[in-house]
Amino acid sequence: MSWIVDNQLTGFQKFCVNVIKCGPVPKHIAIIMDGNRRYALKNKMGKTEGHTKGFERLAECLLWCRELGVKEVTVYAFSIENFNRTKEEVDTLMSLAKEKFEKVFEEKDKIMMEGIKIRVLGNLSLVPEDIRILLAKSVLLTKDNDKSILNIAFSYTSRDEIVHSMKTIVEGLEAKKIEPRDVDVDLLSYCMYSNQSPDPDILIRTSGEVRLSDFLLWQIAENTQICFTEVLWPDFSIWNLLGCVFKYQRAYPTLKKYKDVCQSKRKILSNRIIAFLEDIEKKRMEQMEVYAKA
Ligand code: FPP
Ligand code: MG
Image 1 (cartoon, helix red, strand yellow):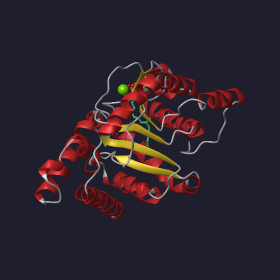
Image 2 (image 1 turned 45 degrees about the horizontal axis):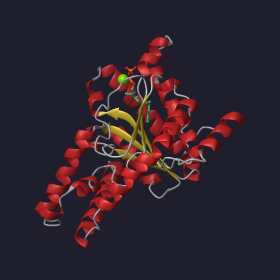
Image 3 (image 1 turned 90 degrees about the horizontal axis):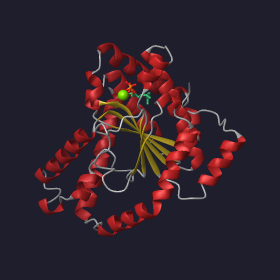
Image 4 (image 1 turned 60 degrees about the vertical axis):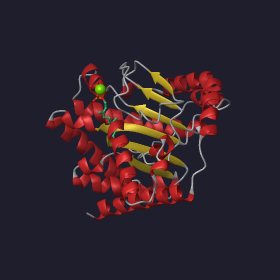
């Protein structure tokens, strides 16, 4: 199964997508794709097949998001906690990731034509080298694309990201690139792995679990519509997605009011902070080059 699936929406699905597009369309949707193993059990298949079905659903969901005009999607593909699963399952998930990231290069032309930028959020130092190389190469290959953005949280937890952001700030303070008075909520946000993205408008978690599992805790703190749904991830359908977007649209007037208040509180960045943030981004890309060349 490919990253880019052919558009097979029925006439009625296209019609419903167009109706939903008359309302405010979310810019960024985040997804906790949960329930692959329960799906496998339910359908009497192995766990590996459950995760493979999960990937297929992801590729379809990315197509639906593109059709809807959702510019950015962030998915929880592998958490740092997932390293605690059995060796057999971690190996399975890693080989699935390897296979799919190798496919990025096989499908390079389609991905570039669709203008998809792949970003990876997470602590890549924990990832096996062969996969880290593929992740870094995928990021570098697609870095200048800008039609749609896929953020893959891999070896990620939100609290690890917050610690990473704090360490970046401590290094900046020690190197005297920033001053203690520069440290505030906004600076922490700008130092997260997700610093290039607006906060998610919608967070979806499938499989009936009503937990956040250390995913984007910082980014959803203010204005994100949270949608928990019973459906297992491989069963997630375009109707489930449209249902979540519809919920967001109903909540939109309130969300917009809060968003405007938050926006109005944002300070104008000083040249010192701008230079510091540019430096962080430069270093991040240099680190990707190092990973890719290993
Ligand atoms: C949660 O279901 C799912 C995962 C831990 C893996 C998610 C990965 C994919 C959907 C494949 C995507 C791959 C790439 C390369 C982006 P679970 O295992 O927790 O299932 P359960 O909740 O039923 O136990
Ligand atoms: Mg689960």
